Image (cartoon, rainbow over all chains, first blue to last red; front, side):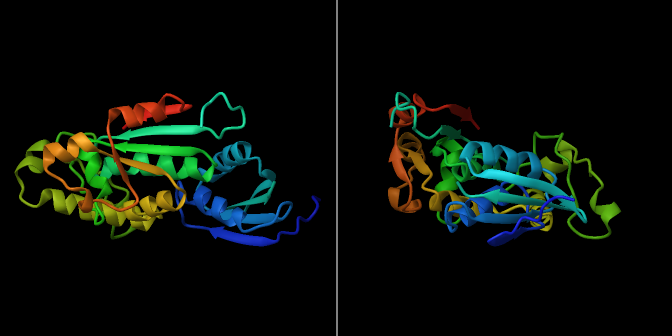
Length: 79
Length: 174
């Protein structure tokens, strides 16, 4: 059993294709305080590698990336 | 900002040289994604790409001379939508209205699949302070005036772009 991560904000990018999940995530994370957690939901199969790259480039940590009911779920901590 | 500063953000320099709908996507997709990663971005719009700085975008698809381009139908059952319709050049070149039909079909397919419109992507780029440089020489050649383009763009020439691109980490010609 993995620990439950408690998010501060949820962003649903279901149905959106590249580059929208990345762009919306970047906007949403700007609204958060340092250390707060954003949960992002996407259906684009390109989202997992893109979110990893986005996290490396921006320094906002990707705490967890998982798949549930055909959706990709990401937990990101604002740096 | 110069690359001698190790803390400078990464930099992307793009040249957008084409004005059709299919070619309008790559520069705006890359620019908005780079902006979302905290990169600095500039796009130099030259030749046919300059029209992408018009307030009202009229970019259309030009399937002519692009026989590899599959056509998709944006309606009907999924199996039907997934068919790649071969489009011979003879049809593209000679059927009146073919381009506008192809444009409508592509726009609808993109919308159904969840791709942003060119206008939406450009607005995102503006919001992320992407530098958009319209080519002065192209304006002169085609008789355009500054007022015909969005106010967010600047006008410049090859030297303006090159000075920016010299310090860029990624440079692409599209």
